[in-house]
Length: 274
Length: 313
Image 1 (cartoon, one colour):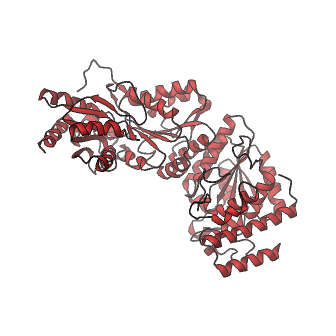
Image 2 (cartoon, chains in turn purple, green):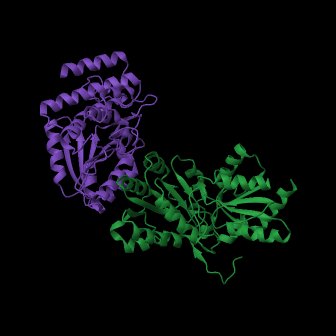
């Protein structure tokens, strides 16, 4: 895959956002806000950071990307399609009968999907297991796990965090989609998380923070994270619904799809932003 | 009651020995423990192969996730705990992380059934067969004694895909026949009057009942159905065609257990009167294993009573 410039990465992220809007409108259900919010990070991962070979998905030297908060899979599917894991036209089949693009990701149904997810908190444990296997096999790849802030309500996440520290898994990077919103409202109202930084630090992790919409900042943070000799938590400050004005920071857009009017309005905004 | 000269050995020791042998032959065998390694007998493996032993602490949900991650990378992880906690506490992880991805994880639930004894109801897994055999991709095994547990452990390692193995804590006699295959049942005693299908160490009670009944010229066919899923349909149907009457026996709730699996098969293929012996929608309690089996009406006098009742029908 050829190196993309910052401008090309921005364009790709914009395309992925348009893909998300179109897919979710077509199927009429799904999680729009979180998917839009993570478009920049997924773009940088799949087109700049990950060592991967879309033509050979079981390449043992590949970096692994584990989507723990599976409900934002539209952004993963769009990134995979644009990275040539499968044809772009398949995106239209999201959540439909006989499609590999399941409502939540299923390993085995679609190329490039490492784990099955949906119920929160499970991906990070699997990422820990994969990171351990990497050590046992003396391999050098990285395991990138995507979790969400709301997902940290789940106790299993903290079990996994303890384990990563115990086994000194410096090949593990957990990117936390910190948009402050979960399905029923603001995270600070549903279940206050306090300082994720202090929590992770006290659990023995290295903590970094980044602006999840600044391409340069994302690249630099991820490049640095790969060199740190500890498990790394990256608090990615993101905006739910990013780049669609009427969706930004609106929790109702966590779990719903746009209607035709909303789709047209969103696409127009995204096309103008290009 | 077992003859005192017979050497008593526990299923968990069979598991522990099998793990050691597997670990020696196959470098991909790893063990994940949730702080009960000595109880499950995984500690022998931990001592011998420390770099392939992962201790996650008292965290069964994470244990299955970590095991899944290892399995997806080509390892063959045995995730070990008590049945009450795994799959008791981590069923969602078993369902989505392990089974939905068809990950090659072996889930070991030791200390199952009333026979755990003094620890009481909270620690007596009586529902684990029900909650595992309903999951797609998952094989469910309930070996009966030391030897069979050892063989089942080896068979599980060879099988590609998730396997749940439940076994008991207490030591008992060895009565299985030294052969084991996933999907195969074993006729322990041939008979023609009634078929008894059971699993686990409680089968010892069935063997005693069969010997007592033989004195009255009643021939009980005793089948050890250690492979609960897949069930050995051929062996069961062949026996039931001959006898026309069935008793099931398990140290587990009758709701959703081996008896239910047999009833599902027979109601579709060969409707037959069945009497299920097991725990009848109750919690367990503290006591010794034999006292509990007696209290919950699962011992040989109750089996004999049910046989005689069924023969009247």
